[in-house]
Length: 66
Image (tube, rainbow, N blue to C red; front, side, top):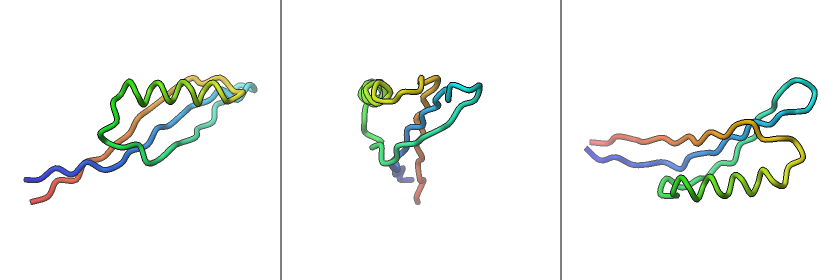
């Protein structure tokens, strides 16, 4: 069996300031990227957005061949 890791995404959840939330995603996160590096980038991006970041989620997928 061969495991092929696919590029993933990083999902931000923002407080919209009126009692709700909204979600935005960044795609193309390399499977080989270290969690700490992804988190550090997410914190930097969050600092550029007016709305407060209330959640981060990293998603990835693996294909199993053979």
